[in-house]
Length: 107
Length: 120
Image (cartoon, rainbow over all chains, first blue to last red):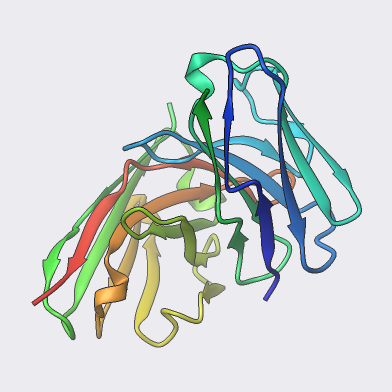
């Protein structure tokens, strides 16, 4: 199975901060990497697919990048509505696996 | 607009069975793979299963293989998850999601989830 190691597990940030979340795959996943946002009590929402493609309707403050097996989600300027838990997911091979999540909290 | 709506969750005893349903609308259901994902209380996301357009291909997480069966009825725009031999660690919110046809098989539309509680 491909392990997805996400870091940090949580972070505190202020409105307006630039935030970076990283996900490392245990094997090459050929950019089959997606990012989701989940707010308490809600279903996850797709933000980024194929490592760096922005899902329709998602604000451009979200971006994804890749370097080898390291994937990064960046929020350019954190807003109150962005406080949530973020998950990466690989769909290169089954079982599809998620990172453990990063909870972004208000400082 | 695209919608998927789960139903069928509830309280079941260990060893029991339950069938979840997911109704889809707003898109051509038969053109998309579909998937189930679950989330135990206070925990992260765990992929459970997916099924191909015409049910030719299915795949399961090791944790549910042999106990859960995914199926679909394209005429009814519906996805199902038959769960048997349920255990306490199957307790979770179960989400139905559409598998995107573009890029990296992302899960582009999710339902609101249905809670399954396995307890005596």
